[in-house]
Image (tube, protein in one colour):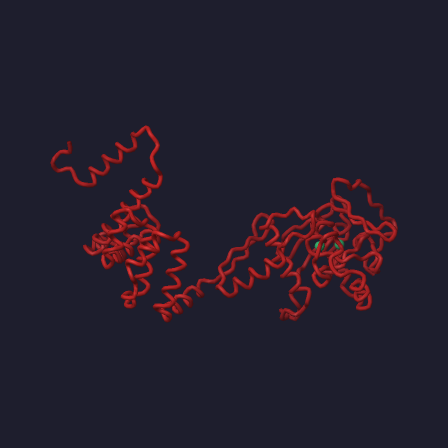
Length: 397
Ligand SMILES: [Zn+2]
Ligand SMILES: [Zn+2]
């Protein structure tokens, strides 16, 4: 028996404690319904306190910030409850369906936010139709329907929102723990273009491609960036085409023990294997010696001449790796005998490789050897360690 003076909330709290003492499992859907009904009650109470100006006496300009602080909720969550509470006042059928547990709180929230955005165009919103949608569709689909209805009922408002969303676009590129971290937001058209381009390049390249889908996507983005740089059509900055700078030494380029680490532009150390790859395909344009005297080993000394490029194209339709379908324009010439170990830039020593496979040879431990007329690809676990002796090594010249 409940005593006189016990509030409805105290009764509910007592019922919850009793429920918590249960021993049997309960139906999760039924439990969710009860929580959703209570969320609706919460939204209604929040609206009542807003109308009473309780947030103002608490020193808050908005009800959402007051609810956020007093109830320990994020501001967006508190704002959602205030919006739902307000809109339910004008939608008795939706409010009734929520209070009876016929539709969930999240579905009611989608309908309420739609009505809020429609403003004076809200008369076009049919409550009965939306209760039907809420019963049939997932929250994701319901949001989709709401976006489209918003567009058809209020195209000007939709356009305004799109422009506001457009202002949210950004890209952060930050350096952390020896890697670059990206985060960003794109407008729908640019995002769709990026996705289409990345998807086109993110397929598996041959049977040995063990990369995960997310690794293939970021590699695809890297390829697009490298191709843009390699084509040399990007606008100049400070009188030079954009490029990647590497500070290295001849010792590091040879991979000698004890050599100082090579660095990318912002002082980011990179492995000697990576430097050798960059040197191999002509990306490296200058080498700094240990005493900081610049030894120019620029592209002129080993850039592939146009006739040799044509011959390379005639020999290979694309990446030379078995099973890889990357076309020739998406490859760089790899020196079978590494350029950094004195390998010559002639047709016999060159094999076009795509970005991924070129990395697999230099950093991934695969070995690619010419045996007679045949090129052999040997995986890392079968490569026999051999010391590279380099008495007659030639350096760029
Ligand atoms: Zn190479
Ligand atoms: Zn390839």
